[in-house]
Amino acid sequence: MAFKLDLVKLKTDASLETTFAGAATVDLLVNTATGVTLGANNCPLTQTAVIPLGLVAFTGGYSSANVSIPATAISAVAPRYSAYRDVRVRVTCTAAVCGTANVGCSTDNFAVRPQQFTLSSNMSNSGLSGTPSLAAGTQFTVGAAAAAGYDGTPLLDNSVAGQKITSFLSVTDYTDRLASASNASPFPLGQAVLASGLASNSGVTYGDVGTFRMLPEAVLDNAYTSVDQPGDCVIGSSSNTAVNGKFGCNIANQAQSPAPVFGRFFPDHYALTGALTAACGDFTYMGQRELGVVLGATALSKGNQILARYGSAYPGLASVSVGAGNAGAALSIGRLAPALPAFAWNQGRSGRSYTTDGGEYAAGSTQVVVAGSGGLSAGDLIKFGGDGAIYTVQAGTAGAGSITLAAPGLQQAIPSGATGITVLHSFDRLASGQDGPYDDFSLVVGISDSDGALISSVNGLVVAPAASVAIGDTRLRHGRLRINNMYGSEQRALLVPLVAQYWNGSAYVANTLDNCTGLLRKMFVLKDYLNLTDVQLPAASTLPLDSGLLQQGGGSVLMAKPAAPVKKKATLTLQSLMPYLPGQARETIGAFKSEPVFFMRELY
Image 1 (cartoon, one colour):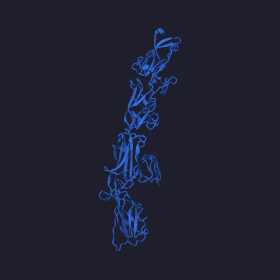
Image 2 (spheres, helix red, strand yellow):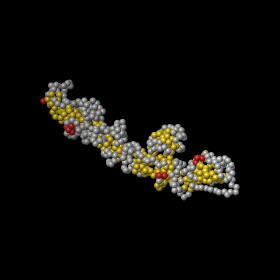
Image 3 (cartoon, rainbow, N blue to C red):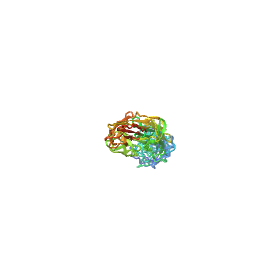
């Protein structure tokens, strides 16, 4: 940019020498550094270059006209720089003009600064597809070009408060995900090279997806014009338009065409979190809706930052699939009920994974605030960590929010701190008959990413990068309840032994792992009475409310003796109402006399 000088001839007492008329030689002594030693005439003893301005005429002590210095005048002189930190005006007057020859330099020095930075990057893709592309968190280069002679160190403002970097979502979606290896904020782009005025940093990273935009004054140097500060330039301004004869002290990037939008960035890798929680120890019966499933995926940068803008606005999202398997053999995921919700990416997360919000909740509470993603729906069955009770969700939430539990609410208090939430499912039995056993059951999660990012950790543990990974390892068993056919007197209670069995691939055998199944009255029914009435043997009260738990798969229920006299041999069916442990048998009570005894058993 061109500028002008006004010169005056002063007496030794610093007053204007009004009678002076003549011409003097004027030039600029320029230096790329400040602090150069000055001589007795206030001129630098050394200089990078001398910029000649020619003879300047004076009248009445004033230069007859402003000395105009075109933009090319400085760069025309070797080393052909356009910017200098320290500039002084030197005036040389001959003896013929001034009486005695003298040379003097201005007491005031000033800087000739670049007008602006032009930003660049090797990540020059301004779109959300195509190349160049780079995994989020991987190093790349950002450059700021000023002018030859500039050797300052510009700073890049990467703070949210600075509002200089925005994401692809909008021009007001400010982000702090642009960083450098120094982790400073703002961070330096490095010292510029004098010959080109280019400052660059090859250790820049962007910890999110898509592109980022650098707004005006994202890159700034407020130190280059230190010789003019504070009074000879406008502090805090990068304006190239003079205000009261002063330009801005700062060098910064201005509006640029094309706009400095750089990218494209995609996920570096994915992390899975998940677990299968068995209903009893290490096993669950097929059809038993107590198989806990937690399953989530997170898109991450190379530095393991969650990619908060990886969601519906970003095209080309990775697809997530979930299958089922046993020891490497595929099983139909359609047997999992209810079906898992569809995996949808939101703020870098997908799947269903929830905890409480960290608050404390008293027993009886029906409202619980939860944090997580994937959705909890009305009708879902859930468990809270440390609480064995099963709760029904009455009103759910699509993301983080409040859920309503069916009355009577929490059976025990939830302490403060995030408490895990598990959603319960069943893996249904085959309608065609016996099934299993599946002693190495797992869910298989696959992620298909067009940019090639893979799963690299499961539950915080590093795994070999893979497109699919098995989550959980539990047992599923096709069960039934073997109920003995028993004969007993009408004068006393009847003890009925029973055993939980499972199909081992060739036969039903006792499930010795079952120490959990409760023998509750509500789990059985008495029906199909023969020679017997409900008055004699009340179906609603003949069985005890609670007969305890199975032990190693075995147990019994005690049928109360008839409430009214039984005159003839009578039979009834004792049937299990547990869909995952079906079974029934005929029980006989009363005197036989001469009738033959028949023993009946029905197995399922």
